[in-house]
Length: 55
Image (cartoon, rainbow, N blue to C red; front, side, top):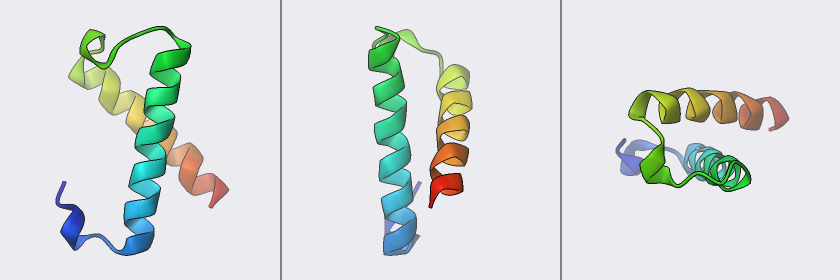
């Protein structure tokens, strides 16, 4: 993802989504290396939907 092409608002949403993903990983006691790319993609999509629903 090229963050330079995102608006400041979009950058804020992406950062909030990543923060939520890492919060979920920590809550599940899983390191980022222990989750598959597909698993992270699903989690990111879920977190993104939650973040955008709240904003």
